[in-house]
Image 1: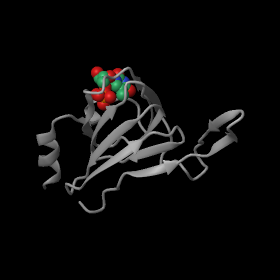
Image 2: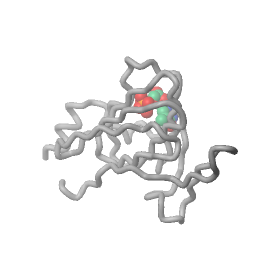
Image 3: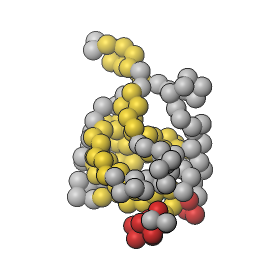
Image 4: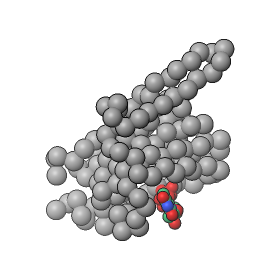
Amino acid sequence: MNDYKNPYIIEFPKIGDESIGYISVTEFNNNQLPFEIKRVYWTYNTAEFILRGRHAHYNTEQILIAINGKILVTTELANSEIKVFTLDKPNIGLYIPPHVWHTMQYSVDAVQLVLASTHYDENDYIRSYNEFKRIYSK
Ligand code: TYD
């Protein structure tokens, strides 16, 4: 159980300056992404009282980026360790490995971009918290 990976913050390059604005970028093979991207999706117009996520994945690795606004991400590892991350800069991402229960809360103006390592597959989700605890208590 101890060899599961931890979530961590990734700082993407921020090219430009105040007068012209910025570009942030990433590419596979630049040693920054821990996986090759297979899917990109984005989440927006989520009210502040809504908690999204509330699941873990068996295989999927993801990077969450607050392109606009603020996202509070709570992660719970298989060993029950809980961490809270604040994403509020468009050049900052949060890597979420497999086997990590995660929930997200968004500011009204938040736009979340997600880079994922797999194609969408509902069978890769663990959607029940009790099931998550049961699987990783073994
Ligand atoms: P879900 O991953 O549960 O969203 P969140 O974690 O943000 O609450 O997905 C919500 C719905 O969208 C669910 O019915 C599945 C669908 N969906 C896709 O069809 N493809 C995708 O790539 C994703 C991420 C979700």
